[in-house]
Image (cartoon, rainbow, N blue to C red; front, side):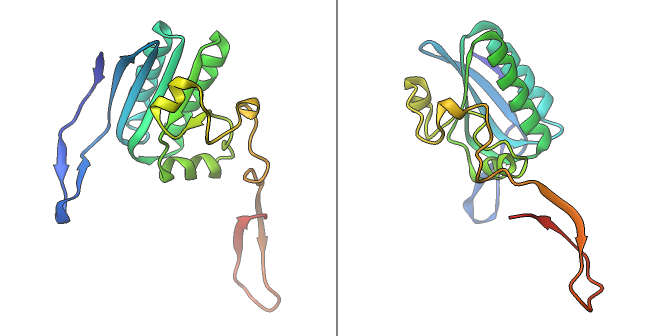
Length: 169
């Protein structure tokens, strides 16, 4: 078991307890290494996440990221996950995310990466190989319904000076 920069937990008004920063811990569970990520996976935290994932992939043929306690993820965090996905694919290792929260699902969808990473409802489901969120045969291809090109052309309504930038869909 290895822990990377574990931080204390801060109590918020209303009795809600949230991590004050990012931490991740690697645990051996059967034949898999489970990396438990906690807190905000942002630009500051993404190198630590990548290091934990890279270390896990160097010693295990099966790495599962428990995302249950991720409270925020930006593009840098997503990049660390995609980097690990590619490293696993290149070595033939199994790499999956478990219990992905809405904040992570949203950034994957916005970046056009939905369906590229194997995702499972639980760590146990990932260990058992029971994929109940995405089809393994399409694990390296974006979901067609969710991958929409971004339209960056300015659209102006007739008689209006307002400009809009949005998604085609």
